[in-house]
Length: 167
Image (cartoon, rainbow, N blue to C red; front, top):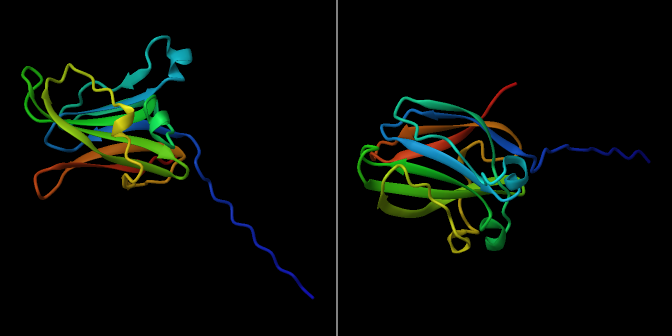
């Protein structure tokens, strides 16, 4: 009797590191990551954030996508994406997406739309956790280096997708 076994190695749930944000859309955007364990690494800077990235602009650095498997964890482990209408000098509509990493997936959904200026950073609360949030567009599997690319959709909204960065 011959027994043949196979083994499949799947990289599941490693650290996901945002290293680039590219704004190909027509609107300013900002990406932030909030993780209470960064308190130990960054003093009192729990929120790591890009500056507001103008249309055609980019950002390079390092931000880890926080893990959250439930709303209690989401309270202190999330990333947010803000898409701004209008100019930095005056208040305008902003769409705020909240996201998190869970298991093998990175998920995100629209949390709220409000009127504010670009100087205000938006924190999310546990009641805004969406356990059934869809996977992010593009490379939704967790683990590895990523870039986020913002783009204009045909319906005049702005979308974003995650892309794997090569080594």
